[in-house]
Amino acid sequence: MMQKKIQSLIVDDERVAREILESHLSKIEAVEIAGSCKNAVEAFNILSRQKIDLIFLDINMPEISGLSLAKSINRDVKIIFTTAYREYAVDGFDLQAVDYLLKPISFERLLQAINKYLDENTPLQISESNELVPEKSDSFFVRADRKMIKICHSEILFIESLSDYIKIHLTDKTVVTRETITSIEAKLPKNEFIRTHRSFIVSIDKIDSFTCELMEIGKKQIPISRSYKKEVLETLEK
Image (cartoon, rainbow, N blue to C red):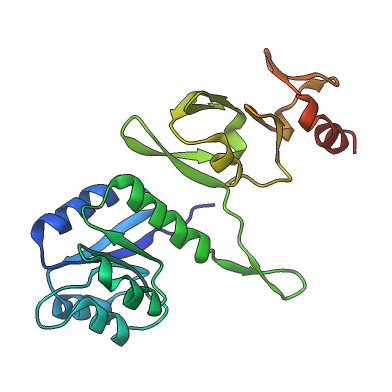
């Protein structure tokens, strides 16, 4: 299922700050930059004529501050404050901001804020019982080779942790990223993936065979450690 991109707006009176955010955001496929403004008036004009999901908003701007702009816009528009001044943090969170980023903003810190937005704003769909339930994502993004790469759940064979990085083994390639295996595990549906070892997560659907001590996916043998054995066997023997 094709996911709708996050329509984002950058508002900052400093040209360099806008350019840094534009550069960072251009690497994230889930985000589309709908506009980049140097003041609140320009931002108002864009907000009045198109749908914006998320604003990266500087606080200390001339004439109309970021805080004033935030108070005047629709609550459906989410805000990530960007500023060089730590003392504004309380005011920012009082306005229910998604996050508060201190300049200079690193790509990694920005990515954390985007993931927080995604966690808090999962689309809802109607279930058969007419109840609202979270719509499940079938993919996630990781940083590798200086870009953000989309990882589809259905293409994962297994995930392997090696020191301070992990290898995501896919049906057609291997992606290496400096995330932890625990952070990746949190992004995966529990009914489709299972941890077999402190260093391995496998796709249940891709398992060819297993014993009490290991499982096979293709030609790869993956260990089942003592601490995970009970859960693994209970899941696979259902």
